[in-house]
Amino acid sequence: MNAPRPLRIDVVTIFPGMLKGFLEESMIKRASQQGAVELGFVNPRDFATDARRTTDDRPYGGGPGMVMLPGPLCEAIESVKRSETRVVMMSPSGKPFEQKDAERLAQEQHLVFLCGHYEGIDERVRIALVNEEFSIGDYVLTNGVLPAAVVIDAVVRLLPGVLGGEGATSEESFQSGLLEYPHYTRPVEFRGMSVPEILRSGDHAAIARWRLEQSEARTLERRPDLAAKAGLPRPPEPPKKTRRQRRTNRSENETTIQKAENVQESPGNRQVEQNHE
Image 1: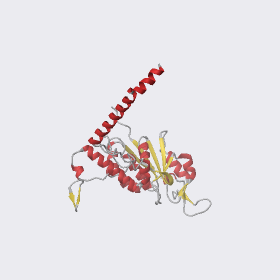
Image 2 (image 1 turned 135 degrees about the vertical axis):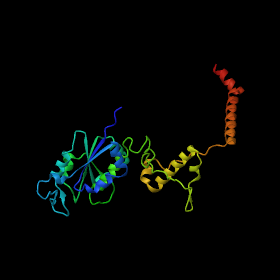
Image 3 (image 1 turned 180 degrees about the horizontal axis):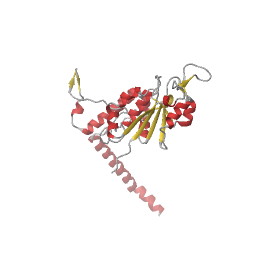
Image 4 (image 1 turned 90 degrees about the vertical axis):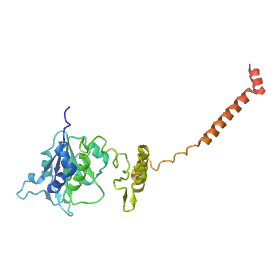
């Protein structure tokens, strides 16, 4: 059986050094060594046309800051672009990045991340080459490199084999639309706090119920927006009837049926039936 084709990721940035340490450690490093992902950088300065390798200029219409030139950026992207490439721009005005986006991007063959700097990127770059824009939150950063790192991490960890076996990510926050339940490990007692007894019970069904309850409670408390999407809070289940209540209901039903049969068998009803005949 042929191994899956690695996901190719290229990052277009004038500050590649900001990412190199991140890409050479931990999970990203293992994914690269396993052949699950191939990583590369493209520096727009290599496509500048002047001796100073200029990649920005003053904005038309005035205003603060500098805007990145369209020429070097477009040429940088086009130097690695293929037919199957998806160009992703990190931008404060982009769509909020979600887990479902990471899952979708993990199915692609080639991703190019365009990282803006300074005041922004010439709009014509977005119109000409960008497939989608993402924001990682409602705050301002120095440039798009760190947001790109966040998205890359979220995508690469979903690639087959990167985190171990199947299902390694299935119970994490956002996979089910809920925040993840609390985790505990040894020791049982730590600074006056104990591991919940149910987690030490060995009752897997009870543990699963506890974890779901904890996930729902945590989501309701911390992320009411996610809770609403998940239909929380759930309507309370009707209380289970006791054995005595079930016997009483059964007896009442039998009495009702007997009364109905008695009515049907009464002399008056038989006389009505004879008259109809």
